[in-house]
Image (cartoon, rainbow, N blue to C red; front, side, top):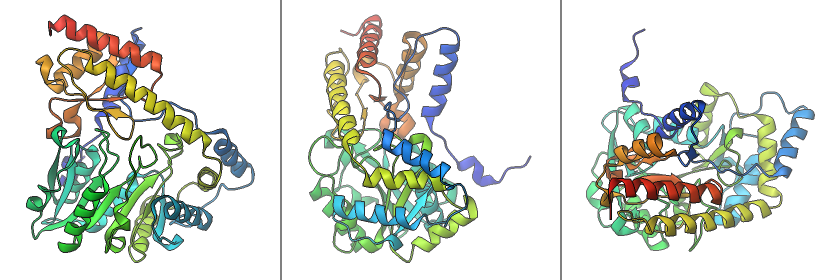
Length: 390
C-alpha cells in the first residue's frame, strides 16, 4: 500500500511503546513498576461514574451536536471563568473526545507548508509530530533546567520570524512539571500580540498545581482573540479512558474546529458529556485529595532521587512527573531508561522521548503508590550502585 508522504512525518508517543515492552516482561513473570504512562492511578470519582451510568440508562446514547452538548459547553465556560478569570460563553467552547483533537485540529486548521510554529522542547511529543505532519517547520523553544524548566522569555524573540504563525505553551508542563509565572506569561503575551501570533495554551494540568497560581494567557490584554486553550477531564478527574476534552477559543474559530469534528468524529459521546457536567458542577473533594497525594509522592520522589549519587532533581511545581538529571551516571537518557526497564524492572521514559533538549534526563510519572515509588527508587539506586557511580 502506497502511503501519503505526510505519514512519514508523523511521530508517536514513546510512553505507549515502553508500556508494551513492560507488559511483555510482565508476561514473562517479571515484576515491573510502571512510571512511564502519564495517567492518574486513582479511580474516577463515584459521582461522575454514576452520572455517566445514569446517562446511558436514560437514553444518552445517540448522536449529538458536533461542538458538544449546550449544558456541558456552558459548564465549561463557567468553570474557566471562575477558575481562571476568563470571560467565555458557550460559543467559545468546543468539546472533543479527549484533549488531543484540540491540538490536532488547531494545528491542522492554522498551519501549512512554509509556516513556522514554536513549541516547547522537551515537551509533549505530539506538538512536534503534528507541526511536521502539516508540512510546517517545527521550531523548538528550549526548556532548560537552569531556568527552572520554564520557557526562556528572553530567548523567545530570537525564535520568531515573519513565518511564525503559532506558539505552543504548556503550563504546568509535561514532562518537566515546570510552571510559567505571571511575569513570564505577560512577556509571552506581549510578544504574541506584537508579532500577530496565535497561541495554543495546553492547560491540561492546570488543577494539578502545588505552589503559586495558574495564570492563563487568555486573560492577558489582547489575548482572548488569539488564544486556544486546550483542557480536559483526563488528568483532573482521572478520566483518561472516558476521552473527554475541550478547547476554549475565539468565537469565530469555534465553527472551524466544529467542522473538523463533523469530518472526523461526528461528536463526542453523549453519556460521557453528561458525566462531564457532573464532574465540573459536582463536589471537588476527590480532586483535592488526589492533588494532595500527588504532592506527597512528588516530595518522596524528589528527595529520594536527590539522595542517589549521579542524579539530581528539581522539585516540580505542577503535573505529576519528575524530570531528573542523570548525566552524573555517565549514561545517555535512552541507554539509562532501557537498562532500568530490562535489568531492574522500572519502566521510565528517556528524556529524548520529549525532544532533543531532553538528553541527560528521565521522565518518571509518580502516578503510582508510595510503596511502588519507594521500590522504584531502591531499584534506581541499585542500578547506579552497580554502575559504580560514587
